[in-house]
Image (cartoon, rainbow over all chains, first blue to last red):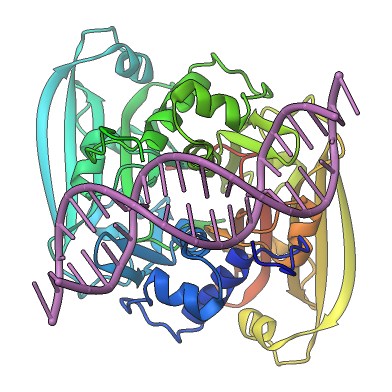
Length: 229
Length: 229
DNA sequence: AAGTGGTCTAGACCACGTG
DNA sequence: ACGTGGTCTAGACCACTTG
């Protein structure tokens, strides 16, 4: 135990270190893709143990500022904003939901199957348990790297979502389903940004529900644009 | 080092423990406000050291499922959704943005001042540096407990925001400003949910900008409702 | 006085990537 | 062979709350 260490509450070492890196990243001094020094190095530079550095970088990771790659290092995150637009462009294809990625190679693949509704799905969609429903899995990659995966469910009699009058989106941080985790190649324990969508008709019928997962650390923030008039 | 421990990648102990509690909380077995066992107890029950338990509960905290109170314990979070509605009700007063809280005592206080625009503010609002602008601080409490604080800035010639044609909202997790942290009484290092708003006129003039902070762990998720027609 | 969560140390093993 | 990040242990001090 270091004697005379300042434990005067206010600002723990890991917060200070995280703050410094956050500033340098936001200021552009550390550009996207740049590798950070190793834990050991940062620890030495700041005169703390490596576990403090780990906490600091965890903090940065939960802000989406860095991503750590096992056995390789910690890197400044590419940080395009994920932009969601409402309502007029909301219904465009998934590929269009991304901003600042026009140069990138974004590939989207879909798989469709027909399944009987589980209890949860039946309740969510308002259909009888066991009723056949349509399930679409959509996976997107950029330059071969996975950037999103979604499960979409709808009753068989729904042709498209033009019958929807309202859209409700719920954003949260979650542990991904095993299937989503595998596709996004997240480390066990990594949270993902989850967007749950419900397309609702005027008679409150649920037209479609969708669960989308995005890797944390890929997107800096979610942006919603909406017309007020 | 315990010999024969299974370090077979797949699922670290802290993820397993976090998952168990997440399930029990989501399932209602552990109701909002209930105190969890102490680190030491959970550690003993699961045959791990307390640091593993800490990581597990950190994971729950970053999902907004629990909140930890220093020197008292860890509690299941009250988890009303923060609902944001677009566009028709978007412009209502802040008090109206909350759902399922109608019984609660929500108090809102405002402070207004006039300040010269800093570089950042001038750029954000599109006014000359040093131009006088209006700054409003809004603080909300529920039963005396702080639940949000915001800084709102607008040029002096803007009377209200009815002149705005578009609203852009950016949601992210951030380290709060010192003022916000103090009001929300967050522990140093705690992230907050930050909503940055820009009210934009048809001629791209910025009518108003606003930075709102919400304590993490108070809100389960952000919900956006929008009309599609 | 006992218990709590928050911070920090020093040290260990693992599996994998790189040189 | 070495370095990396990921996981985990055992132990310590602090400042505060609770009974």
